[in-house]
Image 1: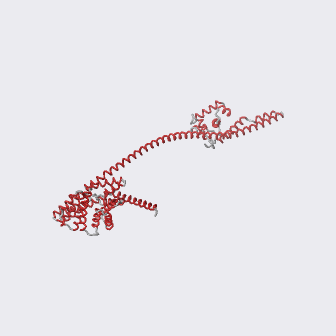
Image 2: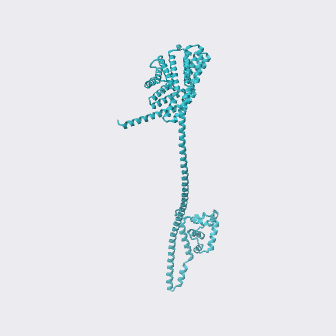
Image 3: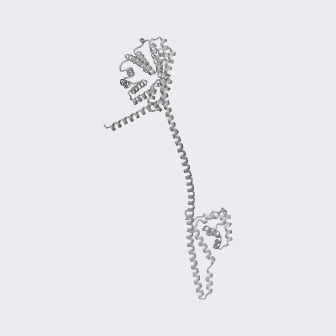
Amino acid sequence: MSKHFILIVFMLSLKGFSFQKDTILQQLESTINKREVFVKKKYAAIEKIKKEATKHVWNGDQSKLYEDYLLLFKEYQSFRYDSAYYYIEQAKLVARAINDPVMISTIKIKEGFVLMSSGLFNQAIDTLNSINFETLTDVYKFEYYSVKARTYYDWADYIGDNRFSADYIEKGSDFLLKALFYVKPATNEYWSTEGLRRLKSQDWGGAKEAFETWIANFNLPTENYAIATSSLAHVYSMLGDNEKNIHYLTLAAIADIQSATKETVALRNLASELFKVGDLKKAYKYIGIAMEDATFYNARHRKVELSSILPIIENAQIKKTQGQNVTLSAIIVILSILAILVVVFLFIIFKQLKALKKSRRILAHSNHKLKKLNTNLREADRIKQEYIAYFLKVSSDFIHKIDQIQKSTYQKIMAKRPEEVFSVLKKYSVKKARIHLFQQFDEVFLKLFPSFLDDYYNLFPEIERVHVKTDTSLNNELRIFALYRLGVQDSRQVADFLELSVATVYSYKTRIKNKSNFKENFEQKIMEIKQFEVNE
């Protein structure tokens, strides 16, 4: 098998474990979010037992009341120290009232457990030593030695000094061997005790086998599952398998939260391990929760243990936060500079857009003027075309008529018939020719401006339209403004064409303008009348 293949398999296995680790930590986060739910369930169970105890107080059933107090102790033993101790004291009073030696000895075992859990190790040993061992059944002898062993083990952990802790561990192991004498093999109690004995004897392989057997072969309650997985995590830690250490610590922490166990070390140890691998955020969160639990349970030795690691994690978190703040400050400075640059660029772009907008306005205005100029040019071109054709036709007709008159007159003079010359000249009427000229002018103009009459009349109020309207196509007043629309705006030229005086032309213009709705800009309105076929 090639080295490359082995490396790929190794990397994939690391990736798979990382995914598994992230998944189980997500489960822990989800469980932490439900902490209050599990605590409420614990209080509900406690409240139910308290109601039974109150009932037995009233009916005087001491045996049942004793059992109720033991049940309340069991609920509180890993939940809240002072309450657990209170109900042990109440059970002790009932046992003494009944005067039952077995009850009294049993209660002292429970009392020893509570004292041990709160860190009062010396008091726990004294209480356990005061028990009349002969009064105990085998079940309680097993519990007696188990609690005594656990007390010495926890005492050794609390001291943390090998000069003294080794002796306590040895004593604890001796008591565990005695406890195993009173329990049957292949039972839940046997494997939990045997696993703890092997663990404290530093038999890591044997401890691993014992705890894995315990988990695999017994349907463990949540509290026992937490103990088994927490112990297995410690074994893997000693074997150098940090990944599995974190894995089982997480399982133990989940089980502790689900059982509302406040006297716990799993979350604290998990925080410590996560701190080592650099996950400061979770480590800081979990150590805080562990301190809350220790404070709630009121276990002094747990708070002392936590106080040794909490400042370290807090200091690391503070340094990390300070580093993040420095980075954030740098980012803010960079962003501020970028913001200033953006504002500068926006200002430049705004100025350019403003200049562009102004240029577009000028261009649009120029386009409009050009468009208007093109329209006027097209209009002028058409007018020119129409009136050039009109001029050619009129001139041609006029020349043709002059030619006929000249020939006829010449013949008649040559024939010495002057009377006929006069007759021919009488037939030609200048007045009729002018009328014909105006008719042709009107015809061409209205062809160019078919809406001229309607647009012209619309320049006047309704009452005045009757006076300006004419039955003929155009009259002299209309022709004055028709010529104006064509661009013939010299009053003398208009007067010559219409055979009027200049004063008469001025008079017509003034009178018409005064009747209109547009006295100040009447000529402009005339110029706005459009040709029918001219498109802007």
